[in-house]
Length: 283
Image (cartoon, rainbow, N blue to C red; front, side, top):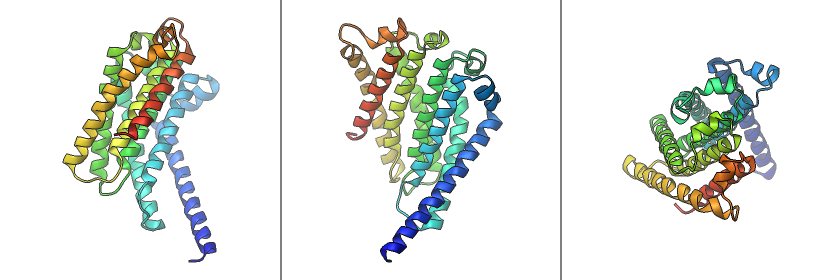
């Protein structure tokens, strides 16, 4: 094939996948409109609800992450690739929407997050939902990527990833210098941003463990478990160590709890995500 033919093929392929993502995006919007216990358009436009805007932003980024995850792997031809990517993207989107119950009842289990988002317009809860949705999308991206697996392997690794998020949230609460749920109810946006960043950090490590070609259950689950143990240990330790090093003479925890310093929340989130990216290159 000459260079001109290769360019035409690349343009055709790119256009086809962009069109597929456009359809997936519209489908994601439809899913959310149908299953959300509130009218999204009214919340975004008539009520200018920033908490819902954050939630939807995390949801749409998660959709993009799933699509990118499904794209990974050797090409089998345009038609076959479109079928495979479309099928696994749709699976990931379904799992993402099913995860809403998990995020509502498990991660934010001590209050009704829908009430906080709609009645209170609680931006701190919106920030956590942004992180939870994006983290879920990143985990789903890892679950649907690679070769050798199937729908069953994708679903199982997704479920294992959700369990990892729950366990990590308990560890985060245990080692935190303040009550996470109490701060969220008090509309402490800094605490929501920090928590969201840590959820995303954990999901990056989980994605790295779940992605790639499926070999066999024993080996893949063992590697997944090892990566989780490392994350459960290193991320809290890094948080404790960096708490006082980033702000000499003070601590990020105190800034988040007492001063409700959103900048401190972003710093904690950034540090967690940065170290998570580094850990994925080492484990």
